[in-house]
Image (cartoon, rainbow, N blue to C red; front, side):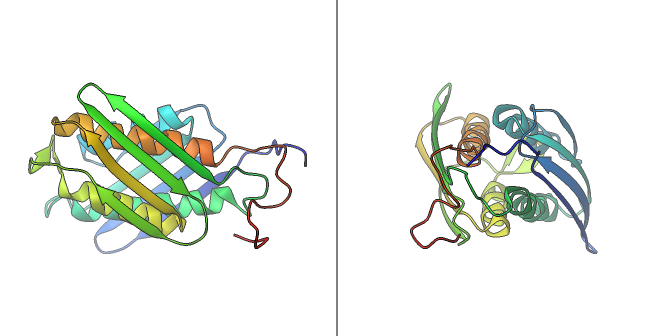
Length: 200
């Protein structure tokens, strides 16, 4: 099977009474980004995701931040997950699995995922502060949960070490980026999809 050269892009929009989101994701990008969610810390995490995964990501979010950051973060996860699913397309020729153990100073975070078409999420990060910057730390779990279900992927995040909440969260976003980059790569040895069932 020849390696696919056309870029894989997912374009998603979501408009509700709580958020208005426009997102474009290119899996075959160079790490370029234009991100505005209204939450500085969240922007920082998503910029790291784009940079370290070599994804081009354009994102504009208008959320009800006068309430808190929950709806903005969770709905962005839903939209990003759907964009990943659509950009990955029929998944023919891709590796499917990805994993990364990523260090960031004191923090060490494992991310492992499978683009299997079946959502499952396991989360084990220990965050002991209410906020990181202007973002509630409890929304980190909600974001990755929403991504896993929107993308229909099996996603595991586990903290192996660390005490600084900023470092732990950033390591999680970067580990996710590296694992997703790995899972969406092509392998010349794969014919069709990598599954004994013949379908994902």
